[in-house]
Image 1 (cartoon, chains in turn purple, orange):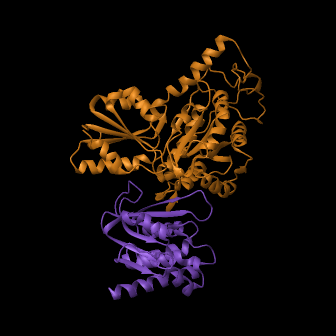
Image 2 (image 1 turned 45 degrees about the horizontal axis):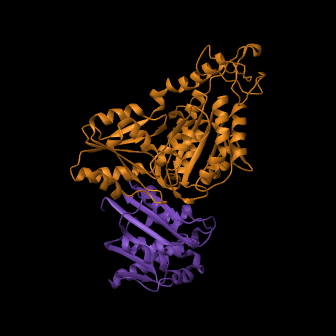
Image 3 (image 1 turned 90 degrees about the horizontal axis):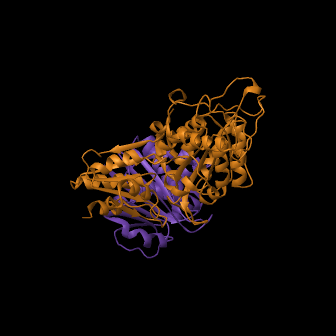
Length: 182
Length: 373
C-alpha cells in the first residue's frame, strides 16, 4: 500500500457518513494495526445540509489529516458529487449512489443503487452508509474484511449489530459482482 | 491501557480525569460539547461531580467555587461562551484560584462558524479579561497531545495557583486518531500546596514563604476572605501601595520563575534551517506536511511547534531568528501570534500565512510561502 491513502465520504447530514468514516478509521487503526485519522465537516444544522467525513490511512505517521486529493470518493448525493469530483485523483475511484446521483461526471465510476440495496438487505434505507462502506472496502481492499466487520460490530448502535453486518455483507457482495464484471 | 481510536475532546476528558479533575461545570456548545458529554459519563464513575449550568458565566463561577472547596475543577466552551467567561477568569487570576478553562476555538466573531476550525482566540486567551494578569495558555496539535496537555494544564494551575487555558480547535477536538493512553502510575500529577498552621496564623496571600502561598480549602476550619478587589495578605481589600505593588510583582514573578517548565516547544529540523515555520494547534499538521514536501525539494526548512502560547516563547524565537533567514507563521486567523513573532524576530523576517474562512490551511498554501523568493 502507498504511504498515504485518502478516502472521502460525502453527502448530506443524517446519512451516517461520519459514522461510516469512524468505523473505517477504527478498522484500519485498531483492527488492522495501521495509522488512521478521521475528520468531519458539516454545517450547524441538526439534519440536512452538506456533510462529509474524511479518513486518511497510512503505515506511517499522518501529519495533515484532511484529504489533499482523494484516492476514493463515495458520494450519496448529487451536490456532494458535483462539489468533490474534481478533488479526486486521476486514477481515483468514484462510487456513487445511483438512487440519489443522476448526473455522474465520468463514465469511469461505480454507479450502484446503494440506498436500494440497503432497503433490500435490511429493509431500512438508513443502512445505506454501511452498504456503501462494504462496497468501498470490497472494491479497494483498503482494510481487511475482518477488520471492518469487527469495527461495525463495535460501533453500531446496540441491538443493530446484526442488521448492520447484513448491510455490510450486501455491500461486499455487490463489490464482488462488480469486480467480476471488470 | 489499550490502544484506542479517540477524539480530541474525549482525550481532553480522559486527561482531566487522569490529572485528578473531579468537578466539571459547563454549558454545551459546538465544538466543545464532546468534553462535557464524556465527563458527564466519566466523572460519576470516579466520585466526581458534573453539573450542566444555566450558562457560561455560571459555569466558570461554579468551577471557581469548586476549586476553593478543594476540587480540581474544569469547564469547556467555545468562542461565544469563552467571551462570557472572561470576567470570572480575571477573578480567578486575581484571587489566585487554580482552574482549567478549555476553549475549543471555532470561527468567529459572535456565533460565527460553529462547526468550523479557527485559531481566532489567541489574543483573547491572553488579554480577554481586563487588567494586567498572569495566565498560562497551552495548545495541542494531536489527540494524544490533548491528553498530555490537559494533565499539564491542571498541574500548572495547581502549582502556580492560576487559571490555565487549554486552547484547542475544532480539528483537534473532533478528529479521531489512534492513541495509547498511559497508565495512571506513568502520569505525573501535581497537587496544590496546603498547610496545617493553626487557623489564626493562616494568611491565604502571605508571600513570606513562597511566591505561591499555600491554599487551604474552604470547609477545613480556616476562615478567610476572597475578593476580586486588590487585597492584602489576609484577602481583605486594600488601597495601600505597599500591598498593591508587591502583589502585582509576585503574581507575575511566580509565573516568570517557572518559565523553564511552562514554556513547552518542540523543534523539528531547525538546526541549519534557512526557513523556519512556527506553528501551533491543528496548523502544525499542515505545516509539518509542507515542511516535508519542501525538504523533498531540497529546501533547508524546519518547524517550531509551540505547545505553550502564553507566556510567549521569546527565547526560542530569538534563537531561531539568529540563524534563520525567514520565519513563516501560518495561523487560522488574520495574524495574531504572528504579532509576537514579529515583535521578537523583527517584521522583515516574518511572513504570515493566514486563513479565517473555516477551513484548515492546506500544506500547499504553506509550501508556497516557503518557496516564495
